[in-house]
Amino acid sequence: MQTPVFSIRQHEARSPRTGRTAPFLVLDTADWVNVIARDGHGHVVMVEQYRHGTDSVTLEIPGGIVDPGEDAVTAALRELAEESGYRPAPGATITAIGCVEPNPAIQSNRCTTVLVDPVLPGQAAPDPLEDIVVHLVDEAALGPLVARGVITHGLVVAALTHLHLYESGAR
Image (cartoon, rainbow, N blue to C red; front, side):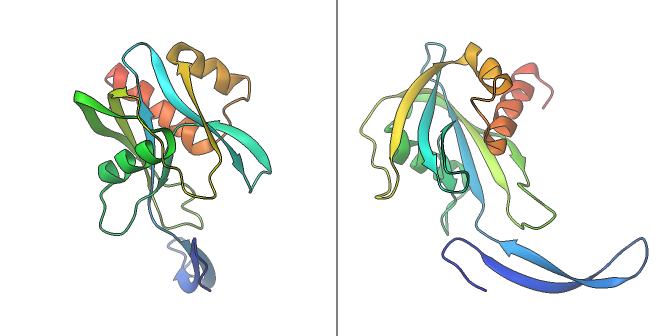
């Protein structure tokens, strides 16, 4: 089955433990990116937007789909500019700091987190169906926002974990 966002395929797989085979469904979709963009003054660029899956407004970092022919960094910079208007400042650090498999039980894609530091404001150009409000959030508030359930998007929480690991040298 093909949809605009993903395709569903079924395949037979064999258990390496038991040797039994069974049919499994896999959602194939493009890879994704998340962007942690810092303004150089202790703030992170965040976007507030409505999410149809949960029928709620969420607070997230910019992100989206890696288009065909793009690498994760190129997609991250495009998504950052489209959703927030922010762009890398001259001499900015732009680096992939982590990658996760959103749901390897049923999905084939990956989500890469890209750090852009520092960024400068500009004009956003969101997709026609995106209704986005941009916020600068004090970086020290991010952990408490996760703990209080304000930031709930699992891939955003993973991205913030990658930032913590990157900065602690555990990477």
